[in-house]
Image (cartoon, rainbow, N blue to C red; front, side):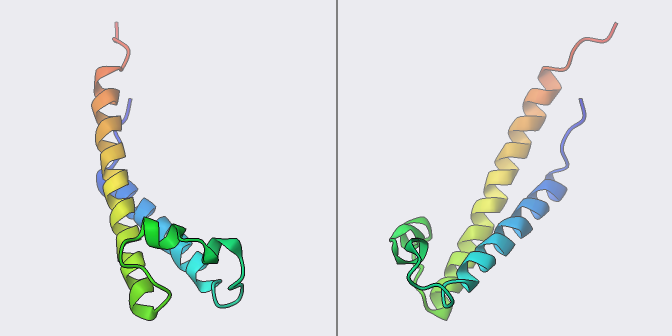
Length: 90
């Protein structure tokens, strides 16, 4: 079984998460009454977040960190188990 490339997976996941975050945050001025934007979910998920430019930037940095740490943990665990669970070659 091949192992995952830590740098490739972490970069890909982080960029995807940042783009998704920016996409969601960009729609807030267009759809302010949507339940997603009026719930306390954003502030609970991203400590220090608010609907100001600084608060959105804090959320962006936190999203990038969450994605990088999560994908690094996933790759580490995947590579650990992949190296131990490969079938024996005869």
